Image 1 (tube, rainbow, N blue to C red):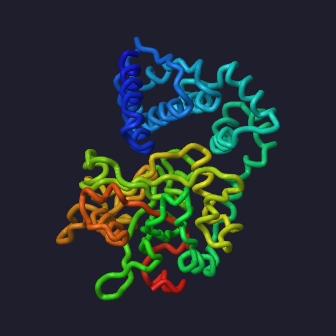
Image 2 (image 1 turned 60 degrees about the vertical axis):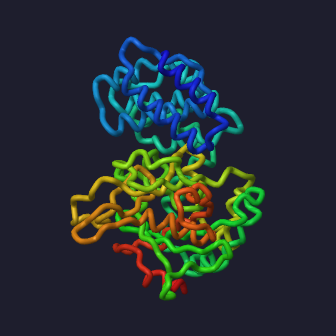
Image 3 (image 1 turned 45 degrees about the vertical axis):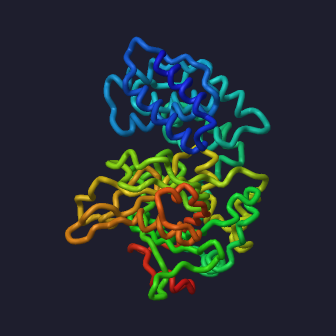
Length: 409
């Protein structure tokens, strides 16, 4: 208990000194560390704010996904969630059922869920979480809960997203690349001098994607020889889960690029260079904010809906980073990349006679495209919009030859 209280004091005293993304990650790390050192004599009974509750469950969820130990299971059941909201109590119960130590939802949560679902307007996140865990809840005997959730239109968003996946019409890809709107007015001009990065992927994320970029004037970034600058990347989760699931693939859609993490302080996991911070475009009526970043041809096409669903279900902590670990299996379709837990990964380390530093190249190229001198100090000024688009389901890495088919060359 004292440990958790100390974390909250640390959080409250540093809130003005750090960006929301940095605060979020730091608090998540502290919660995760706290969960892994708790013992059976400690209970957590603090009435967290809503976002703190969510981060706490995120941390426990990820810790258990990494490894399940008897102590972690004990700690999971020592959490007193009386003050938690319905959504986080549901997520906590899903964890307990998932790891085999609880067969059903407690009576109070069950009743609270039914009361919420009978309302005319229900928080979309609750509906999405129920839809995402439909199989587990049905197996546990909660047909009535699922039936009530199915009365809400949002319940079918995930299924519709999956069912409608197919090759994107070439005209939409071309229009996005050549006619994406100026972003100078987005978020009250915060992105007035920012880059646009277009990451083209396969539907099968076991194959690498390819990034190309436009500078602050909207001009294509090219190499000294005049050829198009590009940067390969992998947007594949090692869990193999879909993008609406926690730790699933990087969702397709629109992100903002908002600076870097303060330090490259976890080099084994994230490589030698600082991680780029990715954020979802905030919610808005009829998603007008996202649409302000898209040409009209994309407005009624659902290629970008995965980021909306991932945002609304509560996914977070997306980054672009390298890795200090090697891919030791050259037979993988993504070699020498390493898969992540939802982040976009870059090649790093030495393989044979080749040393990869793709994250370094990406950071430097963005700074150059922003008319900044590539330097450690200027990395914090990096700003941009990332469009992540699945173009088709060919079983091969995306190359510049693929992009030439859309007039991108």
